[in-house]
Every structure is written in structure tokens, then in C-alpha cells.
Image 1 (cartoon, rainbow, N blue to C red):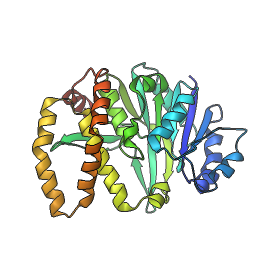
Image 2 (cartoon, rainbow, N blue to C red):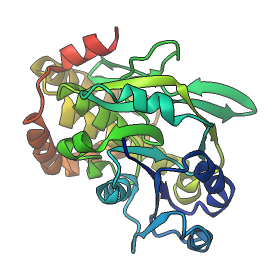
Image 3 (cartoon, helix red, strand yellow):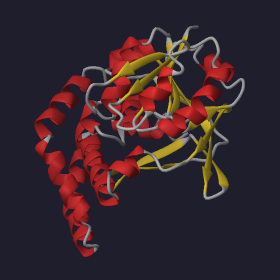
Image 4 (tube, helix red, strand yellow):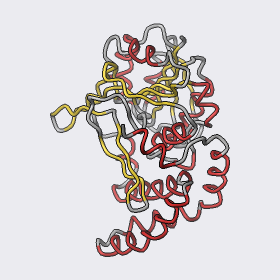
Length: 303
């Protein structure tokens, strides 16, 4: 089974210099693609040092995470594409457990065990929980003692390319970042495919100040997250009962945001509303693949 490693980069000069050699030492037989999203630092100079070992793709302008990853996956030769962020390093032998899980044809994606270094502590992540609550999809970290998951992380996960192409990859409406991996995983589940969490496939995730925090203010990040949460609901909630509940609870959420003086919520809503024709178009296109209702996905994935 052939493998491609895709590493999206934006202003990750120091992370590339530190982590890319480690990645290459672990995935010796795999194709490695680093796609640079029009970095403004010295990333390209660092990548030039590795040009004999990796494939380098340069975006002429900054496209955002979804578009950047889609572009790289399209050029990947592997049957399985593993997405790694620049601040993620796989442990030795992390590939074998991932590949074993793909022996079943219906498996679309497998998430890695993420040893996340946060404030000097190791938090085990990688398995996601999710539920519909008061008209929104609410996600959270799951315990890592089970293999079912609601989504596979776009920064440390493996995906079957043939199914990725059928699903259309990441929805680029989510650019510049956030929610794209949850959205793709959810659409895969509704389309009848399976996703797993593999605790034996371990990566180290050392959180450092990344490109998001350096380019966007905390308020802008919050606004984008809200916008994409609305996009997710309007695109994916096809059960009439969910649509009704979402509409009924919108006044409640608006009032709650007003009470908190949460301007980002309102700005996020209106930014999503402007995209409504495109969201509806995406939804209608994706629904052609759906074979399950939202209620079925929620019940099955929570077992």
C-alpha cells in the first residue's frame, strides 16, 4: 500500500528546520510533499535544503488550509495520504498500525494518538466526540481507550485518497482554517464510510506559536470559528428535525451572545450568511452521496 505524507506550511521556518528531518527519518519509504502557502518567512530556503528528498509545492498566494491541502493531495501518488502539521512528529513505527486499519475497504480515515504537549504536560488527544445540542454540533476530546471517533484530525491523520476524491476533499468554504476536518469526517460517515482512531499510531504534538496566532488576532480566530460552525450546520444538517431545532434555538443563541457582549458570534453569523448560496450549493452536491441520516450517524458513532 503506497503512502504519501502531506505537510502544509505557512511561516513555519523554525518548525520545518526542527521537525522535517525527524519526519523523514521515520517515513523513509513514503512520498513526502511539503506545500507552502505563500510563506513570508524563510520557509522556502529551509525547504530548498531538502529538495532531493521531498516534493515541494509553492502557492503563489495564500489560499488557506483547505485549499492548500486539497492541492497537495491531488498531486499525491499514494493510496493513503497522511496529513501532518509542521509541529507534529511521528514516533517510530507509527505507520504499521495505520496501514493495518486500512485493510477494510470501507475505512476512509484513521486518526493518530496525539501526545499533545501543553503547558509542560502531556495530554492524549486524537479521538473526537460530537453531538447535536441546541441546534449546533458540539465537539470535544474523547478518551483514548476506544477506537471509534467522530472525526479524524487534519493535522495528524491518514486518509484513503480514492474516497477523499469521491467526497471532494476539504470544503474550501472553511478557509482559512477550522472545522474542515470535522466536516469531511462527518460527510464520510453520512456517505456510509468508516473512520477510526488508532491509539497505537503515536505522534508528538509540541504546540508552539504558529502561523494562526501570528497572523490573526484572538478575536478574528474566534469569529472564523463561529462562522465555520454555522457553515457546518447549514451544510450538513439534513434531518428536518435538526433544521427545525437550529432555527428555534437561534434566538436563544443570539440572546446569549448579546448578554456576553460576544460580537464575534454576530460577525461570524453574518459572514456565514453571506456565503449561504455557496453553502446550499455544497450541501446539495454532498447530499448525492449521503446514505444515512444525521440521527443514524450520531447513534452509531457514539457506541
